[in-house]
Length: 319
Image (cartoon, rainbow, N blue to C red):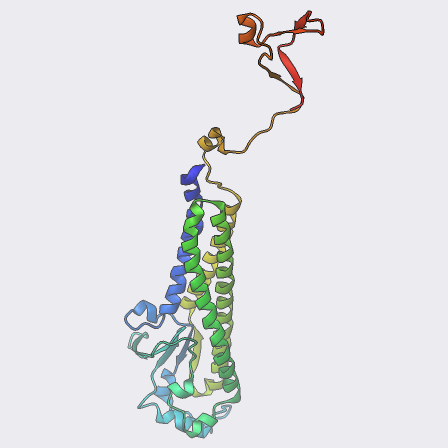
């Protein structure tokens, strides 16, 4: 097949690895205000627009509601100052914005980016150092505590997945030249796949749980939460690309040797042993005999008395 054939053989896993890298980079760049595409990528969204519009009409007196008057009053004080319509949470920061007449929203602010970021509504909504800080429903507070801890692991998993994917692409270049290159690339690709899948599973489970907790704890305040379908699609595409790359790297390790037929013809290919108990032509062990006999190797055999006994042009030899 040769080097060109081997290069073609590893093109597929290399392309899949690059696609996985692009997806992971998009996850890390989510929440960048300079691009509307990147602000549309988020794991979690809290919609407080209905609360802002109807905060004065929400009351604990309404039958079937579970509204705390003190918490409601604290939230109402933020309506005219700090509270926005929309809050979206990415991997490293959050963004907020206001809804427009078309039903969409415009991002007006994105927080500073930092590792192991977690969204704290008490701090973001300006409820810290107020009576409302102690009035957050227990279910929401427990969910936030779990979220804070798991967010650190989730960020670490994405960071390792990104680093391993970059290393996979770099080492994958050497796979063009040998199966050893494929072996080391497969090893690195396996690590990249494991962390990408782990990060995707963690983020999906974490933010699905957080959205459920928000809805159940704050639904009486007309505050809604939802998952970001685009971000989940990107992270699971990264996982799928990474799995595919790993499988093809493994295949390139088992086949596509990179040796051409000319290499084999020059003796660099595998040696084929001769079948045992076959005839092989031999040269004359004697310096006598006519020219034709020496040229053909048909040298007469002689007994102990130097009497000619016959011709044996081939020797019996166990190769």
